[in-house]
Length: 124
Image 1: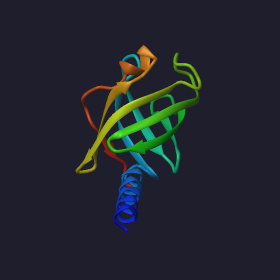
Image 2: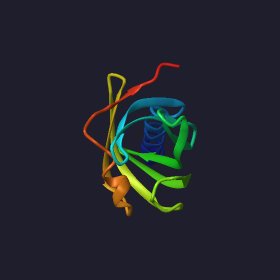
Image 3: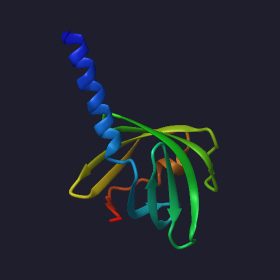
């Protein structure tokens, strides 16, 4: 019985963590390779990085969330990073701000894109 309750609590906790990003948009700047205004558009299990000045999606990815780590996998895009590459970032949400920092990534260009400035939730 205790194991079942613990499993349910862990499952609900994971769902709540994923729900923080699901169907949200976040606006801010990334270094790609210079400071560039972007919008991260999280859907149910995918995220698009929209480059505001160019008016186009720069990279599309799938994502999964566990604890404070987002695991992403590039599915398409113009960055020098390989399609199919999986990478992980740490994240924190507080007061409609999203902080993202590199955790592990095989692509140096993407590793250097994350800065210390938070992205701001776009009200929908």
